[in-house]
Amino acid sequence: MTHPKRLMLVDINILGIGSMRQWAYSDRTFAGNATGAIHGTLDKLFALTSEFGDHVPVVLWDDRCRWREQILPTYKRHRWETPEQQAFLRSYLAQAQIVRQLIGELGLLQLSCPDFEADDLAGIICRDVDPEWEVVLATSDTDWYQAIRRNVTWFSPGSGKRITVDDLGNTELIKEGPFHSTDHYVNSKALAGDSSDGIPGVAGVGLKTAAKIIREHGSVEELWAQHNAGVPIKGVARQRAAGPDTREIYHRNLRLIDWRRAPPLPADYELQLNPGDRAAYRRTCEAWGLVEHADAPEATACLAQDTADAGMVVGRILAAASRRRA
Image (cartoon, one colour):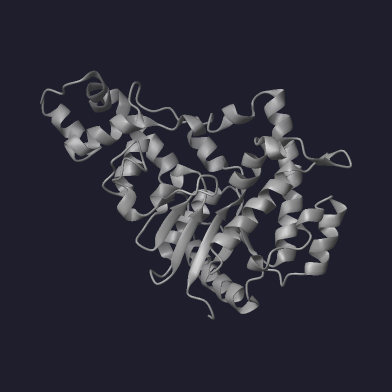
């Protein structure tokens, strides 16, 4: 490759849905159609490709995760219950189709898979990519901390915060910590639950408390062993975490939260690499009133060979992950 071996995995729905909630984009329309998510996604994507110009972007799309819903029927349901929430979702999905078209016309890599979230796809790539490759996770979703490694850095497009593996123990950057590893983080979340995803945890145990309990006892299993052995457990939160009635909650939550426990990747994933067509991109921008975006920054024009090489690397990772399903 002409450039160093570097990928940027972009959590694209975070960019678009977040934009629809920002005043700068929330009221944007063209010909009676909402366009705030399109404007915001392009603005943020172009900022990312400028910030990380030597990284090949891979845009990751979410699908509805029915296998998680089978484990917990209320998974994320609270987000789309009211008529207003449902209208918001319909508007976003309509705009997301235009975003997907535009990204294809820019010649950027896109990845999606039925029943899999962008989180799961990022996890597969980060676990299996050669450590020589540097990876940036472009997302504000802290669930993605679990993918951090020596060669993988988390970056928030909104705040500019960066988290490396050495930062997991830094409570100035991660106030719920300190965490001594990504496993510590995942296990703490399984104990505490995740209200943003509608995942209940042990009553009265938040993420910071869960992290502290695991630090003090070494692991959740060791806490249980002490409880089973009759060792006095001090503190209401610790007693609840140690009790036998909470163990099913913890194990269920691990299945939901720990990406390594996702089912093997099915064969119908879609890794899109279009050659790019700047003229078609400009026509789509004009059709949707995106005049200010019609001339995409040069930072999005990765050399075709770099993108193709990165696509081959990601493609091999996905193919191997899919074969494990067979």
